[in-house]
Length: 195
Image (cartoon, rainbow, N blue to C red; front, side, top):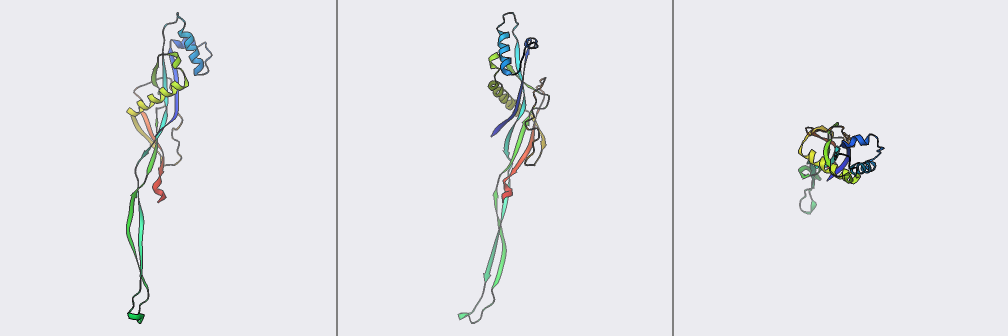
């Protein structure tokens, strides 16, 4: 199962940016309103917009595991003749038996992240696409697409509570398709330790 963490987006529009310099833009809703206002002005040149997506997402992977449970036997014996006239003291015999072998789960939590200072560009064709829902959905899809194709393995940690790069994605001020995502192992859960 794949979970989402820390998706961030920065919307850039040129030459729309000149009009924004004088606008009071606090959030994506006010940006959408300003975008529609500028787009409806017949004297304005058509402008392009894009979202720069950055962030990270986590997933769990099974990395195997095995256990071996010990088995023992302990026997007691006493010998005697007819009618118990002669008998020996009780003796015991202990032995190790073959271990019971099985598999168990060891799971690694991995976080895929866009490198700091990198934004994955996504074109926007309509001001009405500037909504939280659309930006989140398109950035999440693009991030999975982009990072699924190209990544390097980063740091690893077997700590059960590591937070390497988790929730710390940053939207970039520039974009680069040459950048490679980084896959960090941030946590390991070993169910074999219960045996």
